[in-house]
Amino acid sequence: MAAKVSIVLVDDNKNILEFLSEALAAEDVRIFSASDPEEGLDLVFREHPQIVLTDLMMPGLTGLQVLERIIEFDPAIDVILMTAYWTTESAVEAIRKGAADYLEKPVRVAVLRERISKLVDEARRRNRGDALERQLRESATFEGMVGSSAALWELSSRIRRVAPHYRTALISGETGTGKELAARALHNLSSVSNGRFVVLNCSAVVESLFESELFGHVRGSFTGADKDKMGLFEFADKGTIFLDEIGDMPIGTQAKLLRTLQNQEVLRVGSLVPRKIDVRVIAATNRDLHAAIAEKQFREDLYYRLAMIEIRTPSLAERKEDLSLLIRFFIDKFSRQFKKVIRGLTQRAHIVFARHNWPGNIRELENAVGHGCMMAIGETIDLQDLPEYLWASARNTSRLFDIPEDASLTFEDHEKRLIAEALEQAKGNQSEAARALRIGRDALRYKMKKHGLDNSPMGSAVAS
Image (cartoon, rainbow, N blue to C red):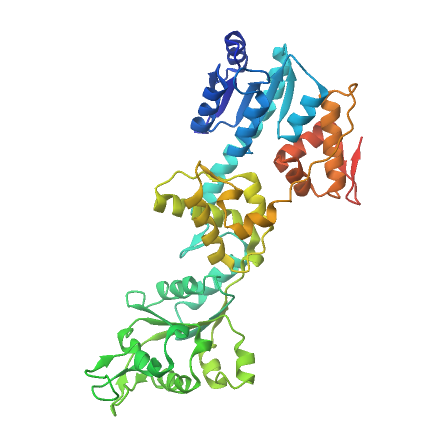
């Protein structure tokens, strides 16, 4: 069953609240009302409605103050201001602060229903979109990797084809792209999935202990070797060993690793008797191994032994269409971890995420979302909740446009001019114009259609 659309009404005149409630009553619409603006805000924060109608002039808080508080809470909420004291200045200010509409009292029922029905229809579409997104998230997860982009489907397809047959594999990709997840997927889909998956980060091992860590040692083989020790290759027997950052392995150890791969046996340090093993080996690197080979830092024969099957994990920049799914996945994860209800990002926070290049890839994204979930006071993550390096760059991204005052212009005229100028300043870029106006892109498109505005082929706004 589709989720109901919620509307909050705020007006200090109880007769008007009753009138509005009756006029907007519908089967799939929930209506809440408050005669005090503070109580109205409490309703907004508790019920998280899609639409709010608020009077402009009220004791305690004005409608513009209510609007500001709601936009801070969630800019996606459509707020409509109503007033019997219509002025050009208040209308323009309402638009700039993010109002979805501005109605002059007394409001005719037909006009009210027409305006609200469009917003309700849009809210229903968003609800259906949210439901589809949840279904997509559930179906867009492959062995812990989340996404529906072509790049991720290509990666998952390659892993499925390779997993039943590989003995060695090399996974390359930038830092933070999920190379260990890809390695685990290979193991989980292989014939040794019931065996151990053993991980060694080659960049974290002291060079003098490398051989002992991998192959083990016998008692007395070196100072401090007071007993026999099994190496990771023996420990991973009948399973998989994952050698992360293989490019940091010392050149001497590389020769012994090559022999182990060729003979499927290990020789413990200080021992003369080799031990047979049956191990799948997956190596990973964020380095250019061809360059390392040219610089004599990596053995060419070891590279070709590992890279019989090579898999590359795409960067987040290559799969930007997965950003929303990944954000939602991490929000769900950290909401459970921190025992908080986090519904998502505010629109302006989402803009910052969308514009960022993510050089640290998915690991950086996970860190940013985790930081936001921890710092968020309400149910949405806003700019101030993000790591400082993200929101600091966004401080000056919003631009307000100057509109000459003209008392003869109606609210509709001002709105049309403001949108046209925003589109012109943004060179026709609807996303940038929506950000500057602090409204959603869907809301911008609706207002463009309402006012007969379009983008010319050259990208500038044209008013019809």
